[in-house]
Amino acid sequence: MNIQGKTALVTGASRGIGREIALELARRGVKRLLLLARNHQRLAEVAIEIEAMGVEVVTLALDLTQSVEVNISLAQAWRDYGPIHLLVNCAGVAHQAPFLQSQLPQVQEEINVNLIGMYTVTRLIARRMVTQREGRIVNVSSLMGKVAAPTMATYSATKFAILGFTQALRGELAAYNIRVMALLPSLTDTDMVREFQWFRWVVPMTPKKVAQALVAKLHKESPEILVGWQSYLAVWCNRIAPMLLERILLMAAP
Ligand SMILES: NC(=O)c1ccc[n+]([C@@H]2O[C@H](COP(=O)([O-])OP(=O)(O)OC[C@H]3O[C@@H](n4cnc5c(N)ncnc54)[C@H](OP(=O)(O)O)[C@@H]3O)[C@@H](O)[C@H]2O)c1
Image (cartoon, rainbow, N blue to C red; front, side):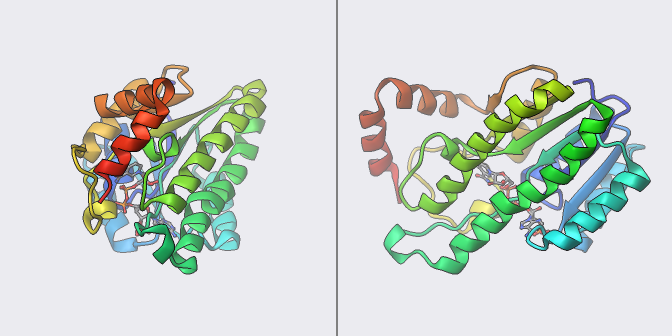
């Protein structure tokens, strides 16, 4: 997809990977950006940075777990600022805990934001993309959507689910000229993982590198974008020697 002159909606754009994706899209010539997250102040700060590049910005301070409000605001946003050509579903939450100490409210939050939130936004936008017979949707999964690891069971479950969701939509929406792909970052240095106990030997990436990898590959047809050599190594090891990878993950787990 050539993003020059196009309109994009990025969820989770107030910080971390989503913020960097928005900035990278602006650098690459997108015309208008709709930025969604809960924190209005942070969104406004990102908007100022992007507007300085000559890109039009609309901020949408919304909680993705509030589906009625999200539906109403996004329908208005499409009417006022659409059509939206690119949707990047980046908002997400993660809780790290040994499974036996995991808490239901945290699991529910992961499911509500990572899955139901993504579903709500995607359904509304995809229905409108269908009428214009054009669109691209990027769902942010994770390397943990391919390789599950101790202490991240429920987060991994949501990220595996996102890959299934993406694959099914890819098939269903292709007939309407809507391309659907997944982005799979590995450990990235953002607020999300600052309180985590990190896995041994894993070198974190910068959110900027993740954003650049996505935008550079947007025009390709790849169903999944892995970022960084560690991800390729882990995925290949999982295919060729899954038992070995499980043993390595156990040794690396906090
Ligand atoms: N960091 C990593 O190591 C890593 C690795 C692989 C994949 N990922 C994935 O990358 C995506 C971005 O993660 P990140 O590392 O950039 O995390 P982050 O720095 O914690 O940012 C999360 C973003 O999601 C938004 N968000 C959270 N809950 C929301 C809600 N209920 N409604 C609306 N927005 C909400 C946050 O904004 P507000 O707080 O303002 O609402 C923020 O903009 C996630 O899907 C994550 O699973 C991250």
